[in-house]
Amino acid sequence: MRGNKVFGAMPLYLKSHSWGEFVFDHAWAEAFHRAGRVYYPKLVSCIPFTPVTGPRILAAGEQEKEVTGRLLADTATSLCRQLGASSLHVLFPSEDAIPLLRESGLLARKDCQYHWRNHDYRDFDHFLEGFRSARRKKLRRERRRVAEAGIRFRTIPGTDLDDDLLDTIYRMHAVTFMRRGQAPYLNHECFRLLRDSLAGEMVVVLAERSENPVACAISFRDETTLYGRYWGAVEEHHSLHFETCFYQGIDFCIREGLRRFEPGAQGEHKLRRGFDPTVTWSAHWIADAAFAAAIGDYLHREADWVDRYVIDARDQLPFHRDGRRREPGDNS
Image (cartoon, rainbow, N blue to C red; front, side, top):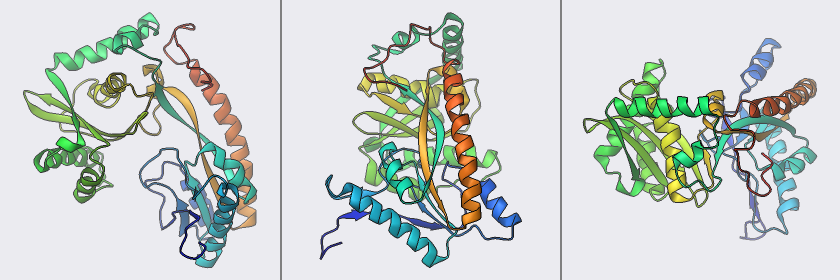
């Protein structure tokens, strides 16, 4: 700040656990514990429960971006020391921020997600035209099984979610967690706040059988991209998850002219359904020099593995060799 003017900001959380991050460092915490060191608390820059790439170091203008960014990153590492935190973690920053973070002593970590891209498809069948025959038949069979179970779908904007429907959606989400023996990360009040503050960006796919809700997928959108976030179901049906969370989202993107669909972290099964392996990043500063060196060595080897994995994963995509139309400049 200079006077009352803010030139930059870097939102941070002091955390005593690693849940809800989607960049997994549990093994690092275990290594600290075995060595008699304390890993928590740690300092994290992220959007909670949201594995979406975006700016983590905010600058008021393009001219101040580099200087402000370096100052903020250096200040964050100093804050780690002041708070007695073991480390600083910047999760899912934009790739163009990685050189700046490296200059500030952070270690870059490479990972992979699976994103769908819209190559000007007219409809879902047009998307499937690029698939190899066997994979196309399997995907159509999945969709047919859901329809044959009598399940129909509605796409509901957040602006049309009344309290009763929001209650139903949250109940399905919570039940899905509890079936796995876990409490849901987010409570009902969080869902209400999301609806009230982001209704224009919220998109809900509702699956119904005999007009009774049986499953839902909650996503958010901007001008170009659909971001899949939460899912829930109170009935089990073959391929219901794939249809609700993936295929209905693809249909929505094609109808709305969105260029990209990010359905969330992890999930190799997305490859067989036409989602491209896509590199994501994080950056990490470790206060302990010995651990920093060990983790840095590990991240170097891990990055080589990710690069090889992305190449191999592209061979698992369902497209014909010449059936996947790329956009200009699409090197993914």
